[in-house]
Amino acid sequence: MEKETGLNLLISREEIDNIVMSLAVRIEKDYHDKNPLVICILKGSFVFTSDLVRHLGINLEVEFIRTSSYGLGTQSCGQVKLVSDTVTDIRDRHVIIIEDIIDTGITTSFVFDYLKGRNPASLRICSLLSKPSRRKVNITIDYPGLDIPDKFVVGYGLDCAEKYRNLPEIYFIEEEETCQQD
Ligand code: 5GP
Ligand code: MG
Image (cartoon, rainbow, N blue to C red; front, side):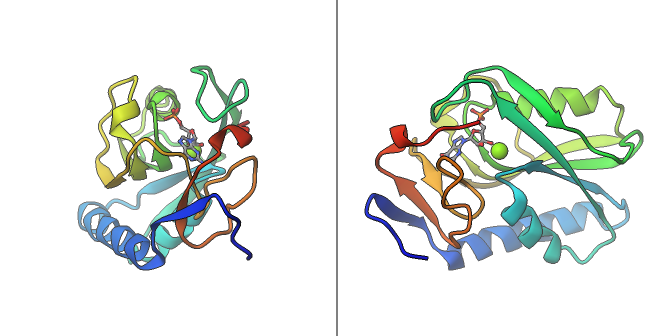
């Protein structure tokens, strides 16, 4: 895919692989006898989830949830909506939420509270990226990948107006006002 100007490499393919593998080692150790239910938050986490589960040599199941924030722009406007739910019953299951990025924390915190209300045996959060300087709600990331500065990033599942999800590396974008989030 042709790279456009305005995209600056932030995390290489090799660095991503190392982060994903180290997260997988930790998760594998904690969940080897638990048959966890791994819940991918669509759309952004689909690439990360598919890489992560292939490094997990344990029994597990995969589910999907889709959320959206109301409004436009590159920031979560604070109102999260569940667009599509899991099919599997999560009651008494060991659930791991898989996030691409935690920014203000509003989306993940909404998903966490929603799933908690369905009585899983345990509920933890794994996030590839985090922007701690932008946090608005407190959130514990049980399996954190990498902290990044306050920059808008694309690639490896993350989009700018639905573009760039297929880039293998992660870039920060200079003109983030051109991105519209659902
Ligand atoms: P939060 O609710 O934590 O503020 O934001 C969560 C969602 O906003 C993420 O799941 C992601 O969809 C989007 N988001 C936040 N920061 C970025 C970013 O730097 N790049 C992209 N592509 N999406 C982001
Ligand atoms: Mg997301």
